[in-house]
Amino acid sequence: MKRLEFLCFGLGALIAITLTGCEPQIIGPLLQSQESGKIHVTGSGSVVTEPDIATLNLGVSVEKDTVAEAREAAAAAMTAVIASLKANDIPENDIRTERFSIYPQYDYIENRRVLRGYSVNNTVSAKVRELGNLSDVIDDAAEAGGDIVVVNSIQFMIEDATALQAQARSLAVKDAEAKAQTLAEASGVKLGKPVTITETSARGDPPIAYAERAAFAEDAAFSSTPIEAGELTLIVDVTIVYELN
Image (tube, rainbow, N blue to C red):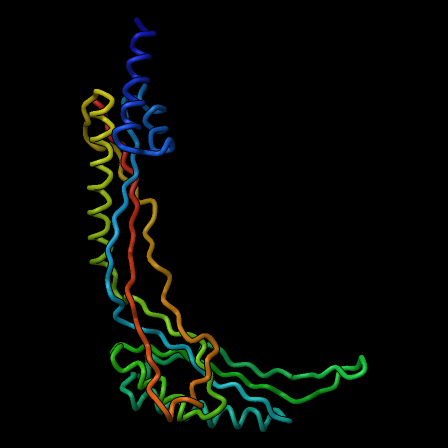
């Protein structure tokens, strides 16, 4: 009798694999948890949206014979860059210094290290909330800072993803429930109430980054810098344990 029950259960699991197209790692937990009367499933929910904010990382990089000369040139250029950012309606609290460094620069001549000068790098991040103005923000900053301006990256993000995460969670739970129902029906059992629900991950596309180490000053006078924000996908995964009746 026990052998017959085992064969019936094995046949039910095989039917579940065939009907749902599930990978063995999805069916595996069902086989392991059948004796305890539970089924483990993972659901995934995703929401696609457009970014609503961009973080612009830019700065100045200059090399001069002395520290004083390099620092003065960098300070003048960065002051002009920050002024251009503020002129484009970026609030002061959305502008933050990210890095400031002074390093000696050397050449190697006939196996000897010879001091060439000093480099100063000063970078800031600026949050651009009006994405339609992003090209103007970049071009104006490049023009203000001159030939020593560098744009390290532009990252497009969602400033407040709370509502989108809730939507993705709901979709993930529905996905898990549909999988559990299919597996239960294929195995000849009835799906009961959920015992535990665990959010295993909440993730999204990495921020879209453009223009790494790009100097825009040379081209800014000729045309506006083209920028496309694209789309972002936010994904939530959940694991749910159901009772089997």
